[in-house]
Image (cartoon, rainbow, N blue to C red; front, side):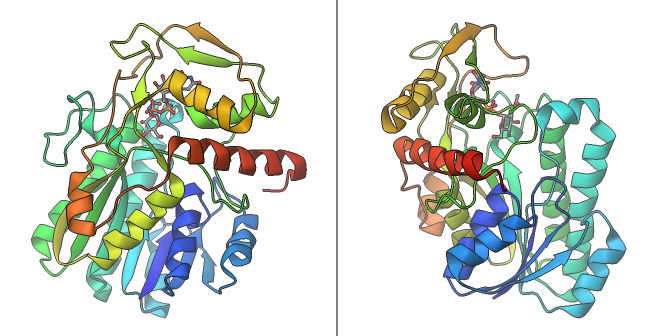
Length: 335
Ligand code: UD1
């Protein structure tokens, strides 16, 4: 298949491109490098030893999208491109709604106009809000606490309604749990801008000495050790989930949780990182972070049954691969 990957230079996009190329799919990446670097494209070539096409495109610009579809014949679209900083989405809601929702609308419109019938969308477990765990695909969605989450819920709605009006269209909505880790080559991984909001990037910056210590947001939740519980998923497993979703995609809307189905607490993750990498992570317990929920993990059975996909990599793998990437990056400072 010839697959258009928007945001293909980003964290999850780049790992997915590697898996698509490994399966001998033809790939066209578009990215505007708003939150990524052109050097990622070289790293993808180095890992796969395969060629792909690249265009500098802003997916919120409809003219650029039309030009792209005029000049290419795609079989499928995987749409990753979007703003993703939760805190920033609260201070810049209009940019988030505009960028994340219009890009989905323009791409879906182009798929309808140019007869591209497969669309895979990068959604988030954040759409479940504070439902009871484990989160299941058929649960009623609860409001999320931030505009970022709302842009994911809105984009899902846009795509579901597009399917109702265009029954040939096949849409897969992939709700990611907490993606972490890096490619085992150490050549691609997550590069947060500024102070990381998410736990694993923060831990790895403490490990590399860029930050003095971790602040654990609350130890008074009703969990095994009082700290927040999340379903961490290795980005390579997540990338493989996209290939499985694409290869099984037929007409209609299909929603899948991409998670491991297991919860890990903040302190369990810290201790695993310390053990596998033999590095001490100093931390302080501070108050809860506004908007955080206590526990989030997936019911991952639907993806297993319908896509024949499940996570294979462990928390230890996630900690080891994150640190391999971060330690190389800190030494080279080049991505
Ligand atoms: C966050 C976002 C969510 C987004 C997801 C992407 C918020 C409120 N939610 O979710 O919308 O889809 O990232 O992966 O930002 N923690 C610490 N110290 C830190 C950072 C985090 O103790 O410095 C704790 C948190 O309280 C939480 C756990 O670590 O219990 C995971 O946090 P994080 O990595 O930010 O992910 P989420 O909160 O699940």
